Each structure stands twice: as structure tokens, then as C-alpha cells.
Image (tube, rainbow, N blue to C red; front, side, top):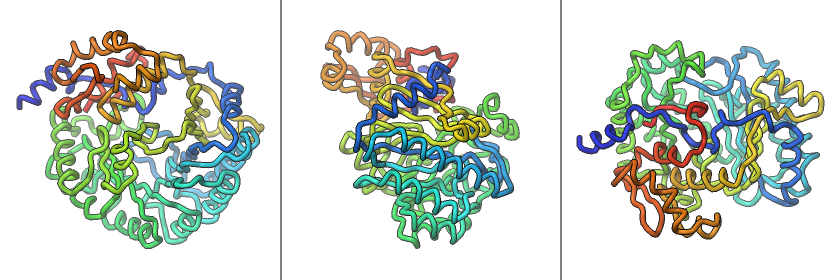
Amino acid sequence: MEQQSQLQRLGLFDARVPRYTSYPTAPHFSNSIGESRFREWISAIPAGDSISLYMHVPFCRRLCWFCACRTQGTQSEDPVRAYAQTLLDELALLKASLAPGVKLSRLHWGGGTPTLMPADVIRTVAGAVLSEFPLADGAEFSVEIDPNEIDETRMDALAEAGLTRASIGVQDFDPEIQKVIGREQSYDITKRAIDMIRDRGIASLNADILYGLPHQDPWRISRTVEQLIALNPDRVALYGYAHVPWMAKRQVMIPSETLPDPHQRLRLFEVARELFLDAGYDEIGIDHFARPSDGLAEAQQAGRLRRNFQGYTDDQANVLIGLGASSISRFPQGYAQNSPATGSHVGAIRDGRFSTTRGHAFSAEDIWRARMIEALMCDFEIRADEFIRDHGFTPETLAQVFAPISRQFGMMVHVDDRGLRIPPQGRALTRMIARMLDAYDMAASGHSTAI
């Protein structure tokens, strides 16, 4: 109770802060970044470098009410096939703009529902990507798989294409919760999909679940976590459901009075967390868990954990290029986002140009603030020696940066000559502490509850 009282006093249960999968966050992007800047940043990638490639498929058979992703519904294959051709055309544009010999450290297909693509389209798209951009040593090819939208033929196509990691959204196995959030997906259907994945020798499996859903209570989330652990995923993301119906209009279908309050949300997280730890998972950052043999756990042990738009990653590439409508690319120079409207994006590619409509060019201050925030989110620590060595700080200037955080959070942070650390009792406050390093206007930030 004392711990909860301290967290309440510091504002955990009232705060709304960004998730910090980028800095600055996407609401601070502007239309000052367009196609010409995108091409300039692409052309600066050295020959033979390794990059990450993300391909966004925005279609779903049904629109889940909890989801805030940019998606659109379709009951027909035709829009999916047409969009896949656009991805191939965009890929050709990218290839023509890059220096020779570029390889992929990561290839990820997300959405939406990439597994809406028929088997022949999966083979065509994967073949085109990998013929233009071969995988580097140790590379991963991952795909988000909807258990309701996968069958043997599509799973065969993914396996033949070289899939190394599958990602499955679970959210919650409770039937009543599934009905309220518009995502009906039974345990048996999920297990069937996972069996197909394992039967084809795809060893790495990610799963996502949510806490803070309507009607969720400790017993129900315990049951879901226990069922998920029985399926033995290598990596789990335990995300807090963000109820933002003013941004994601479909969420108005979820009755707000059925949602747990912030104190209950924290309890739900703690219940799930303890079950994963008891099952032998390592805790990764603020909301991930991984088997000790998983790449995330190894990266955390080695101090190589990173954060990007998909959450935590062990990918060390400096460049992430996003293909498809609304995709965001990250370069050492800044962010560039494709048109969020599928029609506008398709039209641009058809005209032989990239659809970049907004983004952000980093200032020197953005770079060090972004790195400090990432260090907190990944390692709960900002090491003084790194920022003195790499960013031109002195012990005195670092102390000036840390002083407001120390005053605000007291014993929930430790500050000394080695830097700033968040001890275990303060880690629920990590996003709030990171917010103290954010120089942008909070009113314009994308944000959700802090727990």
C-alpha cells in the first residue's frame, strides 16, 4: 500500500504520457518533410550497408474495436492484390534510389493483416523483396499473423519464403472480453495457428496481450496469461490498452464504464508480470517478457536493447525504411512518413514518386534527448560516460539536466557521478520520468495513461 501511495502522490494514476516508440513523437511531425528530403536521406545510405525494412498492409477482414492502427476493412481479395502490386512498385522505386549492395537486417510485415494476402501473393512479394535486398547474416524475417486469417497454404508460403519469427495478437482469451472489444479468437484457433508455425520449423514466436481491457479482472487476466504460457511463446508484449476514442473512432463501440480504473490497471499488470516471471521469462523494459534464449533477453544483457515503432528490438540497423500507406521511416537525419490515406499513397507510387507527406529533421538537441529517453525505456539508466563521450556533455551540464527529475521524483530515481538510474520500485514511473526529458509541447503529443 505504501508503494501505491507513493506512486499516486507522484501522479502515476492521473498522468497521460507518450509511449516513446520515437522521439519526437509522431504528432510533432510536420509537412516540412516531403519526397525530396526522403530521397536525399535514402541516397545517403552507404553502399553495402544493412537496413531494416517494414511493409505495411492496411487491410483487415474485420475491424477490431480496440485497435488504433491505420486499417480498413475488406471482404474481397481484389484490393489486397492491387495493393500488393503497389508495394512491388514502391520496392522498385526504393531499389533505384539506394546505393548498391544494401542488405536487410530485419524484414517485418505488419498491418492490418498481412496474412490476408493469398499464398501466391505472399510468394511474389517475398520473392521480390529478397531478390532485391538479400538478408544479412543473422537477419530476421517476421510477419504479424492473424490466427483467424491463416491456413496451411499461406503458412506454407511464408515458411518457403524464409519466415524466421511469427507474431500473433492474442489480446485476451476471455470470450466476454473478446466480444466487447470486437476480437473473437478462441484459444483453440490460436493454438492451431501456433501449431502450424511450429510444424514448419519456425522457431521464434511473439505474442501480444493487453491489460486494461473492459471487464478484465485479476482472475481473467491470470487465466489468459496461463493459457498463453502453455503455448510457450519466446517473447510477449504486455501492452496497456489505450482508450482514445477521440483518435480511434471505432473505440466508441467499447463502453467506457466497463474499463478498469488506473489502480486496477496497475494490479492487472502486476498479476500478469508475476506469472511471466514465475514461468521463467526475463522482464524486458517496461512491458515485454522474453525467454532467456530470445534475442531481446540477450540484447538486454549485452546493453544492446533498442526501441522503435514496433516496441523493443535487438535490431542494430541505423535505418528503418517503411513501405506502404502510413509507414514511418527512421534515418540518422530524421523521420519520414508516407501518406496515411491508402488512395493517396497508391496514387503517388503509380506516378513514380514516394508518398512522403510529413516527418521531422533531427536537431542536435533531438538526438541527445532521444538517446536519453531510449536509454531510460530500455535500461532504466542514463550513463554519464556515454553522454560525456558521445554528446559533448560535462558532469556539470548533465547535473543540470538531471536536477529537475531528481526534484520531481525523489527516491524513485538515483543520481550520482555515474548518471541517473531508476530503481525497481520506480519503474512504473519510467514514461513519466522520460517525459521530463521531452522538450516538445505535451498538448500536441500522442499519449495514453502512464500505467
